[in-house]
Length: 172
Image (cartoon, rainbow, N blue to C red):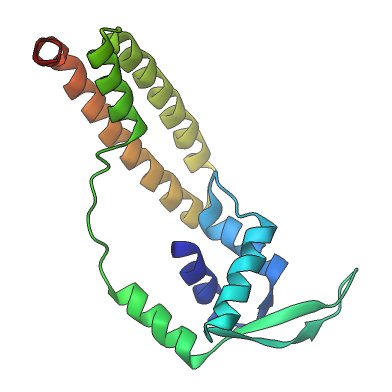
């Protein structure tokens, strides 16, 4: 749901064509999950249909001319509304981590081994992000911080779950 609003925000300062929007999105928000070009064009079509953007001419390119898009008043209003609304905090009760531990406990499999392996994977990813953060600009560093803080929260939960395995096994 955030991608359409991100594209609206990227259009707020100037008109852009689809591939330029994809590159700007990837640079600012893509992190490890860049946007697919086809997805960008589907969203642009929806935004045009909903009256949030309009086609604003074409730009010559190496291939066919590129459609330029501009945000409309309705798009600016909707973007402003969305930015002003706080998000509902939603604990991820069915995160894969939780489900795997529960299933391991239910089936009598070694949940502790899974938690140990997951801890190692989290720590390795944190090291990668910390290294990447050192060479990143301000926006890249902010994204790395966001990812690091989420991994840190997962690690706290992993430690908590590991410390309660005996109690959890007895309750299963």
